[in-house]
Amino acid sequence: MDVQFLGGAGEVGRSAILVNDRLLLDYGVQTATPMQYPVGDVEPEAVVVSHGHLDHAGAVPTLLSGDRRPEIHWTPPTAALTRILARDTLKLHGGTMQCPFTQTHVARLGEVECRHGYRESFEAAGHEITLYDAGHIPGSAHVLVDDGDTRLLYTADFHTDDTRLLSGSTARPAADVVICESTYADVSHENRESVEARFAETTRTTLWEGGTVVVPAFGIGRTQEMLMVCAAHDIDCYVDGMGVEVLDMLRGYPDFLRDADALDRAARHARTVTGRDGQRKRIAAQNTVIVTTSGMLAGGPAMTYIPEIRTDPTNRISLTGYQVEGTPGRELLETGRCELNGGVRPVAAQTALFDFSAHADRDGLRSFLDAYEEATVLVNHGDNCEGFAAELRDEGVDASAPGVGDDCTVG
Image (tube, rainbow, N blue to C red; front, side, top):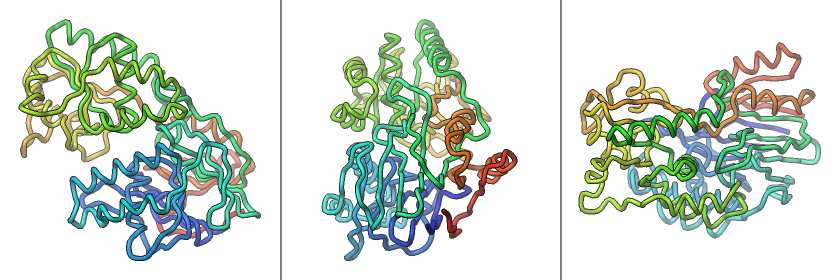
């Protein structure tokens, strides 16, 4: 089996892997400035998309330019999420070099897509494919590829622990080769119950003291989980941003959730922000909780709320996920300052990071790979892929960390 890494190798972002020159696994973007896309020209017969995040699905519509019409295979939630992301990209960057596709390309997805449930095998570009629940976001999948000679498992992003939104991944299908993510290969996550309890306690304290809590959260997965956390702890809240559309969509796919009834209760518990007539500024002064995009303060409604609350130390900003280096959220954590309204401003509001990660940590990755001691492991999707591969090699695993553009023969 021939495997070529077009992106996502030795980096986090623009995941794209070409198998046997015919089958493409993911086709994402790296949200840098300017936006970065997978390398090389590729014209696959079929594409399998693991899940609906920009770094795995954000460039899929570009594959439908001209007369190209590869089949696109994914779960129903991934199909819906990819469209939401594409529309958002068009809204922000349409007609610029940052967005090399149009609404026409997005509309073509309906002509070529095939939707599949978990553990339902299907044929794509001469390969037998099976999707398994990856526990990362609703609809996320491990992708098992069988070309008749070699069984390749592409983990994509995955989580081995349960969250309120999803059950952790338990699937361990037999495979000769594993392409394994390594985002948190050198990190141990805090116990989820402890993180949630700390979030609830600090939030209640801020509200009791008369402050406002802004909870920046990724629109897909994290926003919905934070609403479930607020509902479970009876914390009144508002919800704003892309997460509202995603919330409404996910309620239509109960089979891809751990507890659909709990998500419905969380949706009813939260009040939706429309943003009309200065609503956001009024809400920011209400001694309340606001769950809103963007998760790294790189845009979205959060950038309306933060300037309104930043000068009062009674207020709080509760970040809920990893802050990439160079983002306003990372700057806020490290310096107490943040780029707001075209300038870098000091933030007096209390700021803290709560680790609600949807990725497996070091222990989760190792426990997953325990099932593949005899397999060849190709480490990708991380900032220190070679370091993790070296650890595995020291333990007798046939492991390596390809780079972008590398072509590997495996199996």
